[in-house]
Image (cartoon, rainbow, N blue to C red; front, side, top):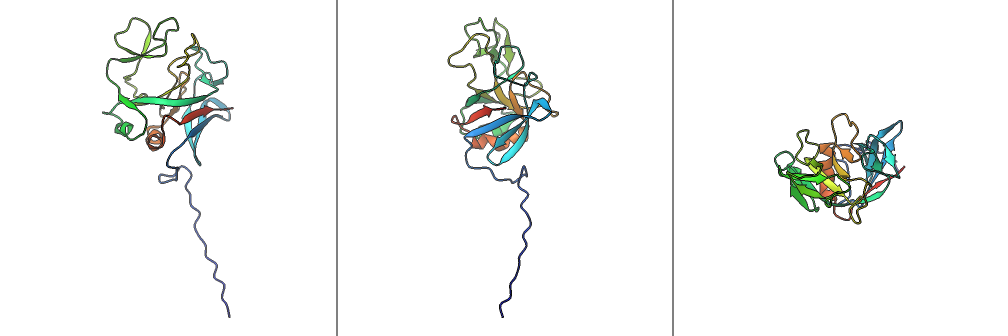
Length: 198
């Protein structure tokens, strides 16, 4: 007589769990708006989905300087910056990462020769200070939006950085929690693309 034994297994609840599976490298981070809230989004990495903040202007195919919109585009991650005193995980990546010093800024004036480039503070033209009191740039990855070639007024400082606790809107960047960034950084390289879709 042959006995049939049925085994039951608990479902693996891996989605967004602490030990959830991610591949060894991520080539594409897909970002889309959260239904009902154009300034918040969902970021997909492999089989996992994480909440993120988007620009106050939502997602736009016609990105302009100062509109607060996140570009509808595929943007390669070029390199990054981090605060070693606040976010030591910034070293755990294949990306070229530089420490953020008190004199690091980013020019946002379309007519300036260093538009959408890092600059040394003090700097004559309007710029964003990278060493922020709110710690949003403790880990800040530079996306290749309007980098080469640069076009006046097409938008500057489009970064992938840390979000506020309540995911309030950015000025056009994509932002995630520090915990999510720490999980993703080891999987990213200068071949990884942040693909913003509708």
